[in-house]
Length: 530
Image 1 (cartoon, rainbow, N blue to C red):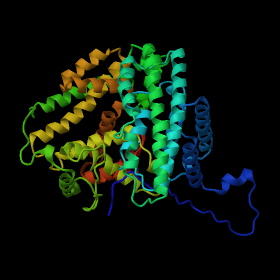
Image 2 (tube, rainbow, N blue to C red):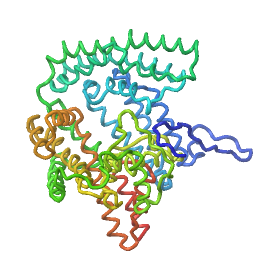
Image 3 (cartoon, rainbow, N blue to C red):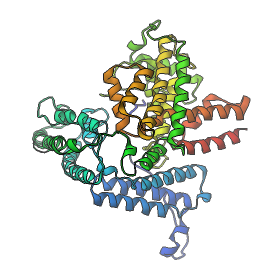
Image 4 (cartoon, rainbow, N blue to C red):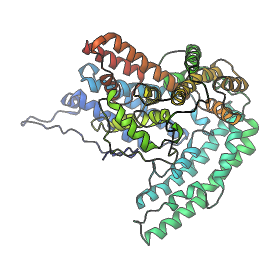
């Protein structure tokens, strides 16, 4: 039985190199020639994975210096591998790894560590999510609970360093917008409250029965004490610092470009999110064109039209799974077995509409991740990593396949799919508008109201997310546009030989990668198929 899960084995099988005859072993300077370029490459990227994980994620100056040194050292070693001597799959590994290292090194130009706290991402939010979602972050053994105790200690150290960094940021002119800082305060206040309902006691409430006394009693006491005496006070300390010191000095501007190095910082984040060299102005124009195109299509499906047949909103995951698995052979050659299980996680509802299911589950985000993680021959950074434009772009593209699969059987379902497309198109306009074109927050709010007509609370939340995570929202539409362009190109190049199932298989089979590298791979595939 295949079970969709984020838990994966990290074991990797390395190739053994056997020496023949009685010839003396080569000296150190001769060693690289005794190993094939392919195996040298694999060895380097696997060592990088281990050493990078060992560094941790402290925002301290020493940790930042160590991380930059690691990136530079591995890039220099990696570039000694001759790319021309590699097979096709190893060339993909080469190109993806090189892009990641070069991008990471460029990222150290910008002082991300001075802005460690916002209401949508960062350590305080991630730790709370890890505690709450025991499906994706399961606590099964005593060792899992011991590791959680270590994470609590790490968070206390992180908090002290984050406060020091934010003080440094205030001195240097790097602060978060006041609107984000104010939104963060009630979150921190809630996280710091010591109540029985606290999310940080969730691991204790799910303590497995397999852990028996006296170990069970010891873990309960240790974890209760660590949460009460270490973790919650750290959240309260961060809250009080932000309220008393940081908020009064937080900036009134909202654009990343308003900070020192801001315009080049935003351009970097755009390149990282979209895998393109397009300027923010170009993406802004593309977004406006997409918004108009999608809104014109939506005119055929008036808002409020009730779905026919079984209401789409009431479909359970199991019902939609069965319908999708039955339809997939029309567009996909690799179809999960009928007994595949999708277990609702804490952050995912038990029911959703069909467009959301196709986007987030099968054949979207979860299906893509399943195929990637099944590739046990890939190095870990490819098997367990990702690329935002590829992952989010594939998800959005998958959500658009419902009509071709025969799964959008009423106007409500078709409109829902188009609405997902519209949201990602609007993101191109608003994100670049805020961070590159001088838009005020009020302008962004007005544009979102005009295009999406959400209520005030939703539009405020959407706007502040764009402010907090510059460039991130560009990935879904830019990635989807690239996949659609590749499909159109493949149809033109291959003509009668084009098979949509083979196209989808080729897109997905090597895992997530920067979409410009995907484009180069797909062009080779098209040429081979002529």
